[in-house]
Image (tube, rainbow, N blue to C red):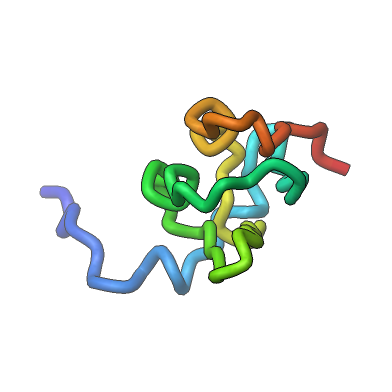
Length: 84
């Protein structure tokens, strides 16, 4: 029979996903950000962090490159760029 299919809590922080990200990654322009936090809310990996100055960053070790943050941004202040 198959082994357990449920992972232990916190395994996503131990198993970084950045090594198999799609060919794109988000670039935060930091020009027109209004601090709505929608990018952080919609991120399935929870790897987007921001501060009081509306400066948002992404932990690329966990980012999968899904592009949800760029799609939801009302100011289009996030671009998806080709992975280097």
